[in-house]
Image (cartoon, rainbow, N blue to C red; front, side, top):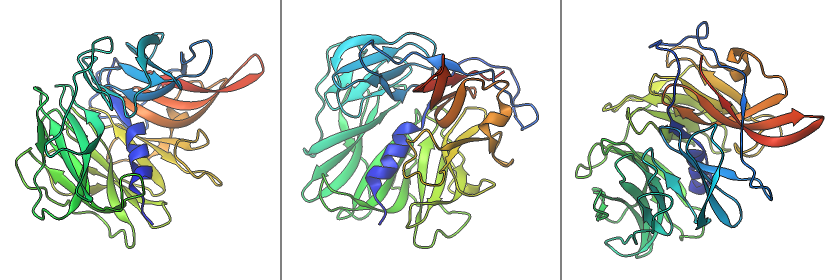
Length: 353
């Protein structure tokens, strides 16, 4: 069975940001190189901080069991915001945030209480750099998708069949939305995914992309969308939750183009077309695991290569799943770090050379 909560977890992992780097416009396996990993500080002295959102410019938020933390960039120390750990917290490049508690102009501001029309139990899934947020709303034994504009007014995204449950899980700065039809069961139970939906504007009916291959009993799903360029990466996932193929949907187009290789889940794309991904290792059951092998497509036309092969020095590190790619191609990921004979779970930052 195809469960939407598992896929959403992957989508939340695959966040995008941007920093420095060289001026090369198209990268290949021959010229794509990263500096040795830098350790991201994620300890408040008592417990590890889990990164839950990364903005396009490198701002990050994360949480412990009780507190929310904020980084101004991957190499900055985390700051306790004084806020509690709200669910589904997402941050943008201006430092604004959306969570189950509402909208924050900054991580130290009081929240603006958000409502939906129609009224229902809502869950936020993203925020763009304009401060517009998206949400899934449970109403009348079904689900709908919509967004809050810059004035925090909620708008339901249109759909041809008003009886069809659907959700929205990604948005861009140009107001392009990505979601899916859903077979609704109940809010706290798994929801079966159906066809992917893409809205080119808040008022247009969605279209269903065309794909380079038939997923059979599975489905194609947009794993992550670059909020600035509008380019999305897709995965074809079968009924056993294995990745059969990967693809890219260019901005303002309707056809997904195939990426070379199989078995690698694409998890994000930079402004200059570098794509990160992870391949499930034997015995692993979730992409959150740091035992996932990290890969990178230097561009959409070249085969993916192991991430280790383009890093100058990985001494002390076991690089795991890349969870975010910066606008210029810098990478944040989860792995294992060994120092003084002690190995611990850690986050790494790879600066593109």
